[in-house]
Image (tube, rainbow, N blue to C red; front, side):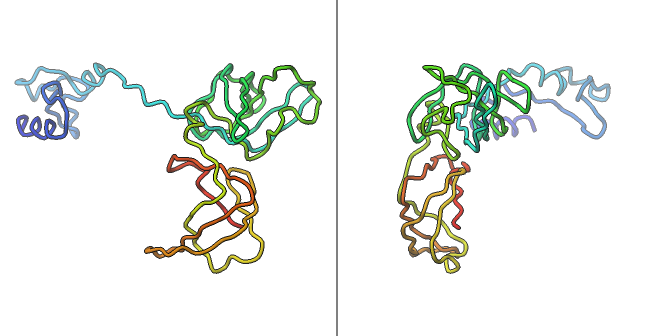
Length: 231
């Protein structure tokens, strides 16, 4: 059995000689956390001991992409609230504003009323950005051009984004769309100039959109920026 298992591991690309082979009984608990007296012929590692010997593998770094949902003004700060789609943000990080290509450092990360040193993808939060030169706290426009639907990203995140005025997408109810339309994506709404069907081989309709102004889309397959609502 061991020889067959090592052959399979080798075919799958593993260094089979380094993989421990541990005889166990999950139902009886043999060799899981303690040596089994029922298997005196085996005195190698238990499953728990083998797991403790493993060196943790650091997961790959994901690009930082933060979707701006709103801007709140307080007596002290202007808080940029939104959703961190991927990556991580730490106080002091420098982020690029898409599509304006300006950059700002993160002064604070707010989770509710608490300030936190770091945030990770999948969380909603508020950011306070540094301004150079400083801007009065109660000034109406803290950051020129910064608004709902804009995106903050690190260099890797910015590389996954692009602006497009013409896009092709799958539409589930193309026949029901008529009159003036807007495309909503990532909190930004843009008027649709034209929409026309494109021949497709699947059951859903494919449509080509021409927009009045550019929409930011992502090269990452599961990004929220690739989910567009027509209304």
